[in-house]
Image (tube, rainbow, N blue to C red; front, side, top):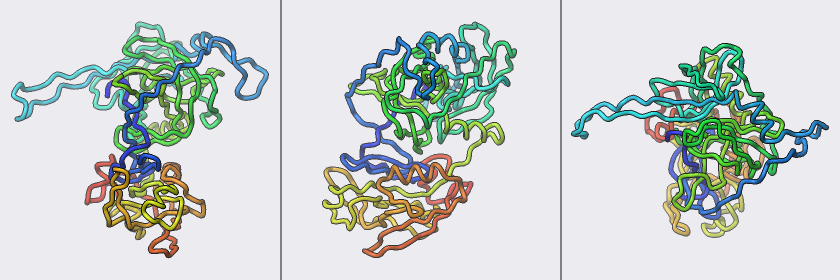
Length: 414
């Protein structure tokens, strides 16, 4: 979606797919999670952006006073990019009597990360583009950008422009693991093509999960009420010290609105660090893959379907030929409907991974997302009342959830 993808909530009907380093979906009260998917909801919740006009306390505990919005904008604004990505015309098809359809131009944001001209943005801003142009800060100069690499699984892309060093103003990258709920933040970007727009708010929540364009889930996402809209995609979310802690990527909308309702999501900069490193070296990124669809077990679900435990993950489906399948993990074989939601019962119940108790599908997703292909995990499962330990060797994540559901293993191996 040009500019800004719509966020998906983790609280709906499971979408059968594969839990890879990310699968998810919530089921009413109990979070059913399916392979990297975050199903959209119909929430009408509206948050009001918090004021951020006055200096705030130093979140790092130092004595240096934090910056105002204006100070952050003056410091970082010149390093924020306005990106235009031209999409090619679609070829004619026998189902289109009007022949070839015209393309279009997606607009988004990005920011400079080094003095070599590298910029970070969202993959969905530039995916499929045949020409990408960049303007920096308040300059009218346009630069042609090349794509160094893209990672659909984290919705990140690395671009490069050939610009004079005095035109490059790299933004300082912070540590997103230190972000706390309530911390003030600033977003700079180009909503609806309105370049050099700054908005402010707070960190509203942490450890969210959102769906990437290829269907897998992104972990440890930062939620903010700073106003972000279509066109802010790829722009920086900046803390009170002027450091980037996230890449603005998605919004949750409600009530038929397509704009900001106070719920935005930013991919953490710590995730981006590893992605950028791999994109610079290889142009692609490797992600681990488990290959299951699962549902979080809660006391109410356990009581409803007579499960032997009050928490854990009920394995509904195992991707054929995937790592979990190879390890002997078993999915469900009995269809059921609980409170209007479809479930597959009778599968293994995951209670621990590498000895660490598993309370939800989010736990599984986070552990797999944090691992590399080839890593082994010891899964403690309950099957027919018996406790078993299965050793899984994580594989390479397929290109998309659709690929992971294919009966034929993905090209690069499950």
